Image (tube, rainbow, N blue to C red; front, side, top):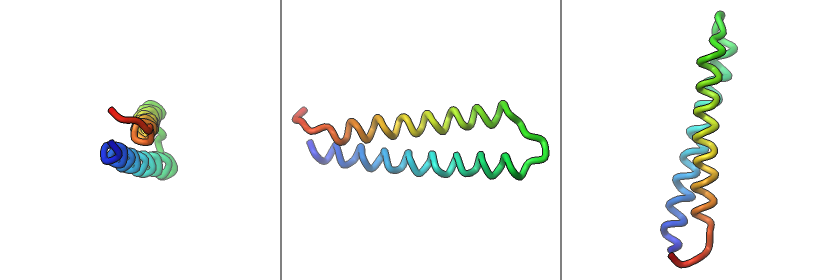
Length: 68
Protein backbone atom coordinates (compact mmCIF):
# COMPACT_ATOMS: atom_id res chain seq x y z
CA UNK A 1 0.00 0.00 0.00
CA UNK A 2 1.34 3.38 -0.96
CA UNK A 3 -0.36 5.17 1.94
CA UNK A 4 1.66 3.08 4.39
CA UNK A 5 4.83 3.96 2.49
CA UNK A 6 4.08 7.68 2.56
CA UNK A 7 3.35 7.50 6.29
CA UNK A 8 6.65 5.72 6.98
CA UNK A 9 8.51 8.31 4.91
CA UNK A 10 6.76 11.04 6.94
CA UNK A 11 7.87 9.37 10.19
CA UNK A 12 11.40 9.11 8.79
CA UNK A 13 11.39 12.87 8.09
CA UNK A 14 10.32 13.54 11.67
CA UNK A 15 13.11 11.30 13.00
CA UNK A 16 15.69 13.12 10.87
CA UNK A 17 14.48 16.46 12.23
CA UNK A 18 14.76 15.10 15.79
CA UNK A 19 18.30 13.93 15.02
CA UNK A 20 19.26 17.35 13.67
CA UNK A 21 17.88 19.15 16.72
CA UNK A 22 19.50 16.80 19.25
CA UNK A 23 22.83 16.83 17.43
CA UNK A 24 22.82 20.64 17.26
CA UNK A 25 21.99 20.85 20.97
CA UNK A 26 24.87 18.49 21.77
CA UNK A 27 27.37 20.50 19.74
CA UNK A 28 26.20 23.85 21.10
CA UNK A 29 26.21 22.48 24.65
CA UNK A 30 29.72 21.16 24.15
CA UNK A 31 30.98 24.63 23.25
CA UNK A 32 29.04 26.50 25.95
CA UNK A 33 29.89 24.35 28.96
CA UNK A 34 33.02 24.98 30.95
CA UNK A 35 33.25 21.41 32.21
CA UNK A 36 32.85 18.98 29.33
CA UNK A 37 30.95 15.83 30.29
CA UNK A 38 32.26 13.27 27.80
CA UNK A 39 30.03 10.47 29.05
CA UNK A 40 26.81 12.44 28.64
CA UNK A 41 27.95 13.78 25.28
CA UNK A 42 28.65 10.33 23.87
CA UNK A 43 25.42 8.91 25.30
CA UNK A 44 23.50 11.71 23.60
CA UNK A 45 25.47 11.19 20.41
CA UNK A 46 24.73 7.47 20.44
CA UNK A 47 21.04 8.09 21.08
CA UNK A 48 20.79 10.62 18.29
CA UNK A 49 22.48 8.23 15.86
CA UNK A 50 20.03 5.51 16.88
CA UNK A 51 17.20 7.89 15.94
CA UNK A 52 18.93 8.51 12.59
CA UNK A 53 19.30 4.77 11.94
CA UNK A 54 15.61 4.31 12.81
CA UNK A 55 14.78 7.03 10.28
CA UNK A 56 16.79 5.28 7.57
CA UNK A 57 14.99 2.00 8.29
CA UNK A 58 11.59 3.73 8.17
CA UNK A 59 12.45 5.46 4.90
CA UNK A 60 13.71 2.20 3.37
CA UNK A 61 10.57 0.32 4.42
CA UNK A 62 8.38 3.16 3.15
CA UNK A 63 10.02 3.24 -0.25
CA UNK A 64 9.82 -0.51 -0.93
CA UNK A 65 7.45 -1.19 -3.81
CA UNK A 66 5.25 -4.21 -3.46
CA UNK A 67 1.88 -5.38 -2.29
CA UNK A 68 1.61 -6.62 1.26
